[in-house]
Image (cartoon, rainbow, N blue to C red):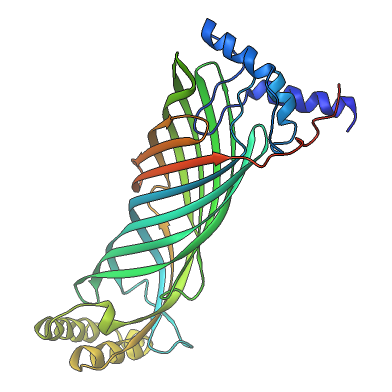
Length: 351
């Protein structure tokens, strides 16, 4: 690496003034105690292999975080979804677009997720991570046509993904940008569903005079969540819809009335669906319904507020509340940090 590239790297680091995603002390002192703490950092050897040039950044007075972390997170969210281009059939090879005839009154997903995450600071201002976990979703569905029906759909599965964080700050002010891409596999879906999340936050850090490695950060930001548009799969109607024999008879009467009002071309197009639904409603046999649809959040942009408490360089606690838009969510996290000892990458380079 030539001197120009090395200088560019350090200038980028200095311009960002690195802080941990969950709070850390920069090299901009605003208190005599932190000036002493910063001076002690300059004279302390950096024991970790990562991040790249971490030792040089330490010599400048930056209190960069321990480079490796493991985190456990629990999240609960309520999402308002919109469904378009719905196609269904009792024959998987002949799906029929019923968007013009069927009406979905509402669909709300209640999601619980437990996630484990491993992350690495590869550069003083760049963190990359991988996640894996379990998810359980209960979708409340209100179908308006061809029959008025309310039911819940429960699905469980595994999710995995990756992401990156860029973090920085000046004095007590911190900034983070976060990107996550996640895939979820459930038995009801024919292929994994992908979620993409972007969020940006600013925060104010409250420090503790007697414990320079302890801090409390108050966060405010905005987030965008995008869902993979297309979903497809199959469902056993008998297990999917909990309905009494009386409810089945009422629904069958509604179905007959709806089908009888259709035009001849529409009856010809929807005849297979009508026969399948009618057979299921009037018999106790299981019937598999095959489907395909496009989904999205009504409003994908939401606001976030949160707090992070850093007990020390190893232990951190985080809570984030998301609101507005079409998503309400709360996440709670516990993070433990450590490092792999050895010669720091690019420690020997000189300006």
